[in-house]
Length: 156
Image 1 (cartoon, one colour):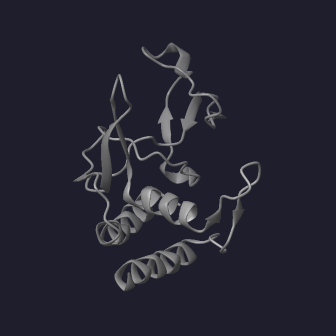
Image 2 (image 1 turned 180 degrees about the vertical axis):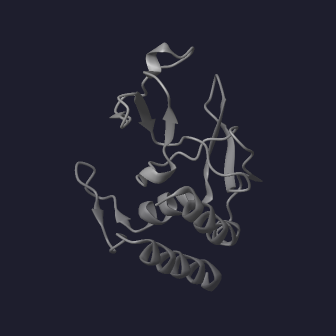
């Protein structure tokens, strides 16, 4: 998945969130200001830095974030990292979370819908190993399950 597809999926997921009664703040992402909260594996849209990132001010590696160290044809080195910011105009949802020290938390609309669908179609009776009750391995199956969730909500 690349950032363009994420933006299209988020636009498609936003009406589902509204129909399911999402109470978070809905807004559009601004350039280099928001975080989408997903791993983008398509390397064509990865961020490229001309030198080792430890020489940049404020750099830190976020845990198990994938980082590629590439050598160009002329021998110059550069670093590639997955993007953290969505494209401008990507539908996002967010809100304040936390009790004593609340913080702003945001995620793209598709990731929010996918997490809702996955938690709805999971059998939580066995806490050690929750069992999914439906196949949710592809995007089309997630949206089909979201259709069923909306129909279930409208019937009730």
